[in-house]
Image (tube, rainbow over all chains, first blue to last red; front, side, top):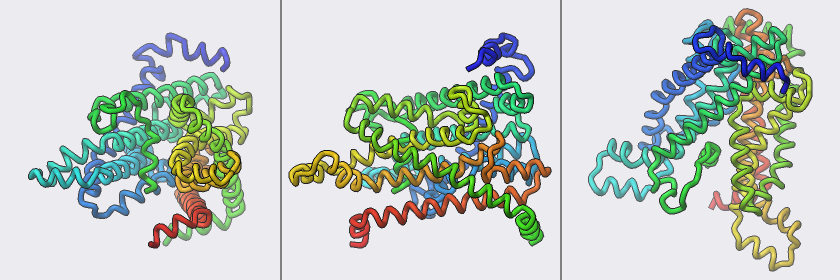
Length: 240
Length: 222
C-alpha cells in the first residue's frame, strides 16, 4: 500500500463529521442503502419463506430463488433496473432488494423445512395453532440458518451498493469510481479498504446478533460449548 | 416485439464483440474455479487431517468471502504489484473466493465418508495415497461437487463486475448499455447470456456427478 493511501485515510479533514464527501458521510450513506434494502427484502422474503416452509407448498419457488439469485449478475440487474426506472435512490434500492430477497427466502424456507417433524408434531399435540407453531417453534429453531441467509443478503447488498456508485449513487463506492476517473489511486485504495472493513464488520455484527438471538439449545452451544456459526454453514441446505 | 428487433439489430452490428466477450467471460470465470478446485483438495485434506488447522483456515475463508468483489479487484494491484487493468487480478480474486467456498465443502465432503469404507480399504491393503484417490475422494464427491456448483455459478455472475474497471467480459455489455444512455438491448443480452452460461455450467457438473457417482443413482431409484 502506498503512502498516499495512508495519508488519505488518516487525514483528519476526511473524518470531519459534516464534511462533504468525507468518510463519515459516505459510510452512513452506505449503511443507509444497505439497511433500507435488507429491511425491505426481509419484510417481503421472511414471511413468504416461513409460509412456504410451514405449509410445504410452492417449495420449488423457494429452492430455485436461491439458485437463480446466485446466477443473476448483480451489475446486470442494477443496470437493467436503472435503465428502466432511472437513476436515484428508489431504482437503486429496488435493484438491491431484488438481489437480497433470494438468499433470505431460500434460507428461511430451508431453516423451517429442516425443523424435526417430531418437534412440529409434538407442538401440534400440545394444542398449538399453526401460527403458534410457526412463530414459537419453527422460526426459533430455524434461526441459525435464517441468520446465515441474512448475512449472505447483507454481504450481497453491501457489495452491490458499492457498484451502485457507478450509476450515480453515493456511499463508499464514490471513492472507487471518482478515484479511477481522476487517476487518484490512493483514493481508490482507501475506498476499497473502507468497503472491505465495513463488510467484514457488518458480518461480524450479524454473527454476534445471531449468537444473542439463537437459543443455546438450538445451535448446540448448550452441549458443546461456544462455537462461532459461520455464514458458509448455510450453503449446504441449498443443495439438498 | 419492437424490443426484440432492437436486440437483433444490436447482435447484427456487434455480434463479434459479444462473442469475444462471451469467450473471455468463460475463461475468466472457469479458470479460477479450476485452480481453486485443485488447491481445495490438499487444503480440505489438511483441515480434516489436522483438527487445529480447521478454525484458522475456515475463519480466513469466511473473511475473504466477505470482502466485496470490486474492493478486492482494486486492492489486489497494490498488494501483488499487477496493473489495475491486468486480467490476472480477476483470476486471483475469483480464485480466492472460490477457494474460500471450496475448502469448506471439500472438508465437509471428506468428513462425510463413512469410517467403515476407509477401514475396509486399509484392510484390503490400499496404500494411504491410493486409498485417498480411490476411496475417500470418490465417496466425498457428492458434497464436493455440490460446492463446485455453487462456486462455478457464483463466479460466472461475479466476473461481470470486472467490466467496471475495464476488463472485457459479458459485463462489458452492461457498461456499454450505460454508456449508450441506458440502452437496454445490450444489458438484456448480457444478462441472458450470463444466466444461460451459469445454467449450462451447472448442468455439466450435475451430469459429471451422475457419471462419477453411479452408486448414488442406484440409491435414488430404489
